Image (cartoon, rainbow, N blue to C red):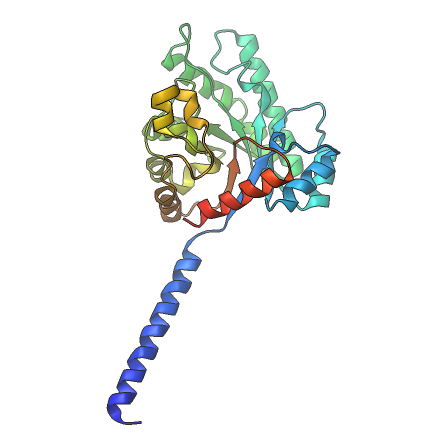
Length: 298
């Protein structure tokens, strides 16, 4: 081999090595994201164990539960989780819509405080890291300021239980006329000022108001506790009304998934993306798992 050939071969080898290293670095850059569905999305007959197994077989890593629920004891959940290998990815606090923390009626607010405490205790027992909470709703007789103040008061009353259970509170952005942009969300969490309170970011819910990637960067890894994944179409919204925007399949709406995933990469989010879409049988669940993998790969 002459000197010219040697140099050319060495340069090619070095370039190939650098390219391979760059590929490896890119592969290592993205944190492991796990996918989950709500138990209510599994339209399969059978026991709780059967339904957990069907979700696992479809390709999911975890499950989301609505608690408290008289039919779902912690013993049953732990048994189904161990048998299937599914983690409990998240819990939704069941009373928060009917008895919002923003209500003018103290008795209604108390119902959700007690329900949230109980869900947090169950979360600790089953190894779940957070309970989703809709903090309240702004109404004709409930001002934005009242919703802000009452919900924070209610959340703070649950902090001791969250600490004891090692299960956090994750506030969700929903269509409740309250906190529909990320700067307000961050300020809300900063006013509570507890590492046990963060955000359960619903990607689809914010698309009609703005851009999900803005939320991700504003909240950052510190405040992002969990994700809800669903699609939204602004064009369908404009033609048929706001809720029609949700009537579109994953990756067939106007969510800019590459931009969302890029933002999640930048902040270093690690954890679950929980689907909140129409469920179905085993075939449907497998389809949804495959679509979620494509979203994560964007």
